[in-house]
Length: 461
Image 1 (cartoon, rainbow, N blue to C red):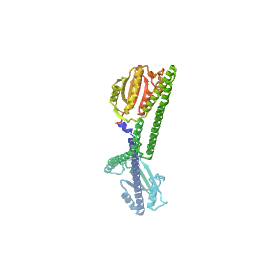
Image 2: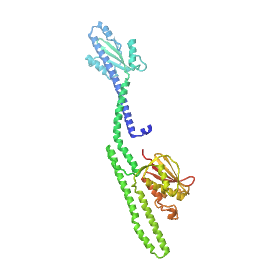
Image 3: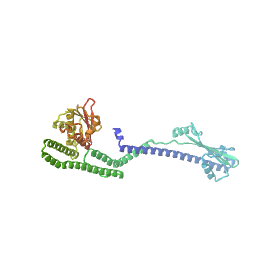
Image 4: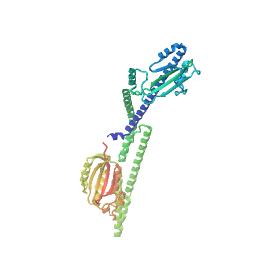
């Protein structure tokens, strides 16, 4: 059941849209979380730089004996200050692109004269929280960071008047990605529900005309008369529907014209054949007269068979849903030629009863005529009904299994109408079956005899 649903184009398109939206949402959330992390880190870095600039300015403006007090007051668990004769940062390469130095110079109103050195590096491996935190703050910090610590350390050395350096050290952790499960779940379910509803509505408008087109194609293949389909849906589907309507009209006219030509030809031949029969009766020589009369009678019989064949092609009988077993039992009761009817499954088929009865009668009569008996059975397979007609005759040469369906082709070499017929029985049967979406094929039985397999579509439920 699930695999049948997954084969539906509507389900596949909806799932594809949902998967694409889910991937897009996940990537967006990931990028947003990363941007948030970068923004927080930048804010912390600029905050430390701003404090360092303010402390440097305060130290330069205050008396020398107050400088230690200023350093002690400026220290905090997050930022450590130290005043010494050597810079903590020994190089002048800025790994931050000069952003921190620019901010410090702007706050100090100094463009070029002061030496400012900045060093940024990421701490690799297992780390502890900031070293100056108390035990309680450390525990709180670890809980807040969920134990996921990835720190950025910044060292800053600012030249102070008098040959001293203000060294600043700080560390700020990369905040872990926050995934509010309840909010994400609610958002995901709501978005999915709205997406499925909208997609289902759009797919219905698109696939509805396609489903009607598929059904109409199947009914047309079974020979049913169907009305022109309404042109609905997107432009491409409208064009496809219009093309199907044109094809149906052309096929119907083509078959009707061919059938009328064949019927008219057989009908118009009756008059000259009747005249030939009259003239042949006037021949005085007995042997010649009998030969001419036999030839004319054979031609008349062929014309009647041709008219019968044409009638079999003109499918004016409406399609009906019939129970196959009851249908075959009624056929056995109506036929003069007896045949054995085997048991089969209960199934309903959609067909033209009179036409199919005629096709089956032709096949069964052939089996009895050439095989001496006929056994009929049926099975259900892959949405079709397979009716088999088996005889115990000599079979047919493999090369002739398909040719026997050609009109007026006879395997019987005597050409006698009494023993071989006209060679139209199987042709009529195949034409009737194909006109209703069915098929017939022949095969030699391994134990001798011939098997005629007739396939008919099961009625739609």
